[in-house]
Image (tube, rainbow over all chains, first blue to last red; front, side, top):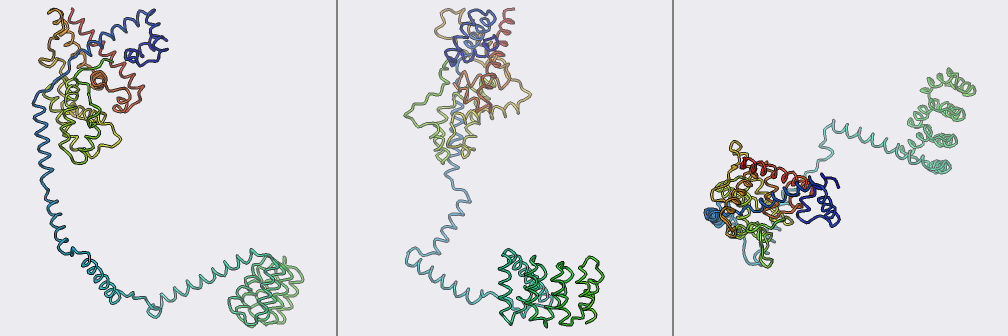
Length: 279
Length: 200
């Protein structure tokens, strides 16, 4: 231990709170170090004088003043405040309103409940807005929303269908073919399959299924819209045959575009050229 | 540590504890504050006299501490130690006092009639010398910064241990010991300087 460390431990050494080993080290150091001996003696004398300072005694005035203050607080605590008085009056008022006997309390509660139900049924019927009450602007907005919802539903349904294997999708189309009277929703599903399905076979099957409904404008428009995005020559040829067979004049611009596109298979371009002549 | 005499808080274990009394006060039994006053007004008075060197002001400060106990009794926490709480309040009251009286320095002179001549002193000359030394010690203590006076007073006269001091002064136990070491060094320096001046 050096002198600084020893002097820092003087407070604990004097109080006897040092460990035995530390106390022994301090004692050994004090035997040989004159500086620390002087410091230790000075500290001892200072503490001795400090501890000799006599305790102070307050005058009787302190006790008198304290109990006067306490009495004041006790009086204030006993005196009810204006707020408490008002609270009590309100409590008494409501106590007088309500009967004290349990049977009467039950009867009163029942009467109030029945009266509440009757009044509620009579006056609080919800006024649900009828469709007829809606103005034309609201109607058109609702129709637009319905359309968006339907197309979203189709997209979701088609996306879910895409998760299935190709042979399952083919089976679904076969099932569609079995129904002669397909509704617009089913036809829209077939058109979506024609437009987006990654399998050439599935797209060809969808187109084949659509032949039975080629007289529907929805089907013709769907096939026509799918033609420019189609990249399989087989399906392109089948689509051209489909549109030619129904004599869809709206298909002429699409056919012309095919004949001009050098990237398109030559067989397809020839078929488009022939179709233009037939139209 | 030297055990102080009347200022040590002596509580009979079979009596109601300070904590229980304070819980009763907090619950609305205001009259129980009288019991706490009887236990603590002397130590608090001694604490304030050591800090301010003024007797009348110290009595007012003790009164203020008990007033604040009443006022803030709802803030007393169940897990708290009452002595720590009351000294915490006392330190705040003292700090407010010194803030308001910043222009008036601490009295370095001992209060009147501070030291009665001890009965056991064998000779009149020794008694006079001892009273003189105590007066110097009082002045030396008064010359210390407030925090050092608080620290020494609480530790030497009120037996507040290092752990509790650490909580009161919001620091570690190690930091309390370092501050105590510095405070004692400063006290010793002032005391011996005053003794030299007296001898010269």
